[in-house]
Length: 303
Image (cartoon, rainbow, N blue to C red):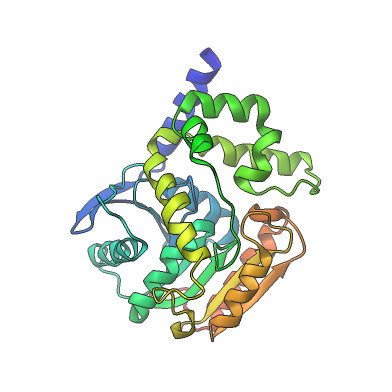
């Protein structure tokens, strides 16, 4: 128990030191953190995340010449969640955040389950999006299903989750964070996987957002082939989709179909690395930078 308490204390201190802020809007309270001084990019985290996960992922995949506004989505950390949340409402919350920050136009990067609200924001507010980047995205097609029994046991209680990843982490890393079973983990990769698993803590502060993602948001986009709320063909914004061919959570074939439906899109297909794109962060960072510059996104503030 001493180890558990010490590690939880360290994680909570880490989150506090990231210096996030909370603003009140007509969409409720929204938590965000802002880093850098270049052209702004809205970072939209994946399942079991928060603004801290967004910062972690942008640090790996976004060049520091850009400014990052990393948001905690509905029900994550200090962001509130409406009584009857929807992905469209989450997109409206992004617009409210940008209004509060006096930002007219930004690029958007959506990671994993964050792709649904990133796409909705682009559809609802196309005049405010200069470029769209979707990394290991939840997309139309077959998607993972987690039983509510497993969710209730492991993703509501901090100690149970901590004990599981501490002593049985290798057993759950494929199903929970998308490390392919056949992928060889070097010491460096093992450290990255362990770091992400630990920074899902405290799960008790992310449970409402995770529940919405797993049972509403992600299934909605998985089953969106004939959903009028996802007219992918109407997206007129330059879009880059990044996917690993061995991703067991966000299937590569789904990413391919997404690119086929979004007119101004292209696919960066990585040969391996799973859901976390292990071993490819420098290539991803380089391709995202090239994509943004090729679509006339300036490295200077241009809002």
